[in-house]
Length: 598
Image (cartoon, rainbow, N blue to C red):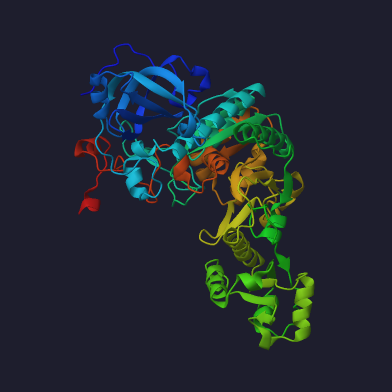
């Protein structure tokens, strides 16, 4: 039967009991993690968020009544134990436990809450993920998840302290806002008071934080909840959190980038004891795409993309010639000692892998110990193969993986994905290794085949480079953005830009992406009007808190760093959200679901 605390207070957490407490009486509270009954001696492991302490019920100390109560305890019971700390001796010392040198000899025991048998063993990572998510409150008792959330809390605390010291104000922006075009799909909230009208949950605080700059707040930050109704991936959730900031009276990317570097240096030092460089590497978007096939390249390993256009320009291999004749390219990466690492069966799998990136296939050429290993030997001369090997600086055992395509970017993206796939497969980087860089000089626009128009690559409030303004009306593809993404270990940790603060340039931006004046007024009228009353130069950035925690805790699954995450289909296994609601609620909102339910 459960008992009441009746004013009893915990004096120390389980994981904090050390040799300093030997001989002292303490009160511990927590969950029963393990239990061994040796007749006259009962051992319990008592667990809370801080760790585990061994509790001993000894016949030399305990009454028969206390021993009987202790023998009734089961796993995951919540109990309170009062006793004296003593030193463990001999084989009883556990060097693998933080509290392995001590144990608590129980004198009093209260069973605060009983527990049924859990649907899975607490801490068992092999349990089916769907089952663990259904009982998320039980899975949260797992040490790894608890430590992930501790790290998340640490990052938030460090961020608040750092930005406050830099003169930033923490300001909340609305959760119920206006739906705007561009970007991802909004989560909509119907209005009862305004029938047929909807709020949108924020995809980011972008417009509001710029309005705060116009409002004179100078430096803003927020640990902001954001929502996007889009397909999920391992590092994406429908609701996510970002460290959002904005600064006034800046017009150079460097000022925001330096501040962000300082924040990340502080976070990594305090959380992991890792010294990041004070200034991260900076690479242009075009250089990243050409060398690594990605605008978020993983710099922990080499295997860069090489251009073979000049080397194979006279090739008889029709695949190379067709690509070059169409204005395309031939690119390659070299896997060191790849001839021994990749069998023919594995090479065939790599061919199928690159095809998922919309290229036609993959050619290979290796300098094997037993001779050449090549998929196009019959189509080329020995001299041409030697030329490829020389251009790629290949050595004995290396294998070149080659993609030819009519579009340079498509070829580079396919090889970039293959590069990362091989690096993970052959463990080309070490755990705890961190490579940081800034990607800059993004294109301001990208062409949407679906919409048959240019769209903003980031968002329509990003400032163009001053020297590229002349191309806004004549050749938008040449315009570069004052934008910057921070990348760590091949993941985009965040990004930002200098904002447009000139109303004429903002108007030109809207025109370039095909907005009519009516659309501008309808979607952004309140925002554009604010430009009429004095707008300071400003810029900002948002870091993805969830992804940052993932990097710092060495996990590849975003669900491991969020207390109550969603599944791949954006549902919550624990609460069964989303779920139908009563007809009365729908009627109040003037919503009909008849067609859906038919």
